[in-house]
Image (tube, rainbow, N blue to C red; front, side, top):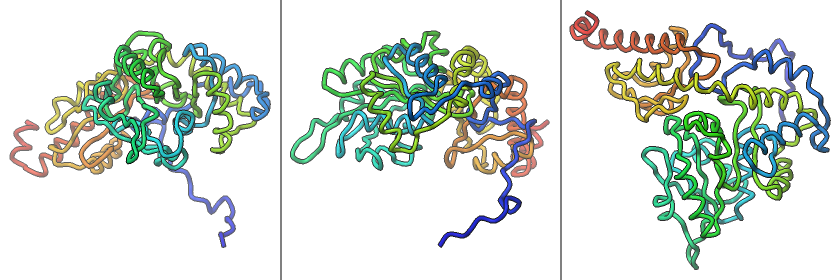
Length: 376
């Protein structure tokens, strides 16, 4: 029998993050802009389950227009958007192909298996960019002893490959070859506007040949909540029911969509600043002893290995917190920094300087003589 909650005064307090801190954990940590807050307060709303919220309709229409697709669906999260897409394109017991460190594989609670009943076949791409020759070898045609592949999932930009961008021609070749075999292609485009900024191309050119795309409003675009799924009208009509099954039917959610419209129209135009700040941070830490940047920095993510520093990522995170910087490890040896509109160039460089100070202090403690020489 569950316990009856006590008074609010007994609830644990939310973890505080002082506003002055430099937060490089993710681009999901941003606070809504003043323009977003005004738009949310003034949003025209209705019951979205009945299709009566005009602000959500406007957001969905605008997303479909920007992506040059027939329709769009507002969903609470990127995970929900990807989960719906996998279900749309597969049947129970089939296989999907994705990169071996893809978000749909590693960070979505195995929803492809849980909700869609499919097996994800991972394909390693050292630079994070899947290419057709790699995918082709993993495609299963079905036999008395094995199932068949029905969907290819791409990710652009690729989170765990340091925000690497898939070239347009690479995606187009995958789609052309996949469609020739009767396979669908879904793009996890959580940060697709970062990719478009890096390539200096309109987002529609990056997604022209894929079947469905999910993109997030709450990452680099800075909205407080929400993602969109875009694709053919028939698929999006089916997606409405799948969203409902996942608990994603929302009522007067135009207050959220209003912030999403600001994100889509305004925040997408400033992403170059985040990319330049990420590059500046990477250059500032590149020569630190024991630090190795694992992927070329093309967008707003920097992944770096600290194995040779003699410190674990958890130790470095803890020490950085004492310097007013939040930055997380992603495994036993690597860390990730993500830039966004709530951190500026000076703050990124200050975080890099703090990292350097921490590593030098550690070296001095571990080897006083060596530390003296380096610090001198």
